Length: 170
Image (cartoon, rainbow, N blue to C red; front, side, top):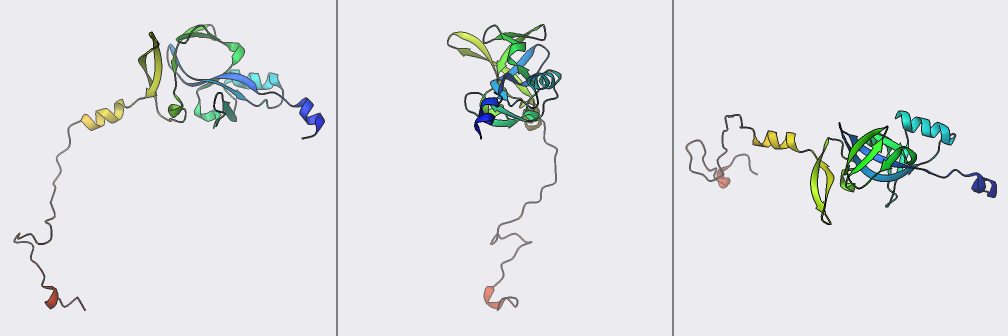
């Protein structure tokens, strides 16, 4: 990188990364950033319209994740975080559920669970396992099961083959 490139380089655009948007709840992964593509104005326009495609650098650990994994990438100036539990975005008040790192790449639905954090109630996002649980708890369909008897069992259908007289053994 030459000196001119270094001086004119574009800084990453800071934003809030949202994994899922529910009716009144945002599942927020945390802060992140994206590289400016073209001008800052064009990149902001794409972010606000939900049309940004590209890598997202997650804050804190510098993981780089494809933007397709997230429901919304909100420019920092458009998101007002009031506390750990609520924020304002697009003129609406939202509850916040924090998404742990293990769920950032989860493709399914997330649900929120209440957690006591330093004496304060806080919502965290977890994978929705209700479909798996319902399937596991549903009554099983009766199927015909024919057990295979172990070798050496004295069932009338099974008999031991004398290895010394076996014509197929050489």
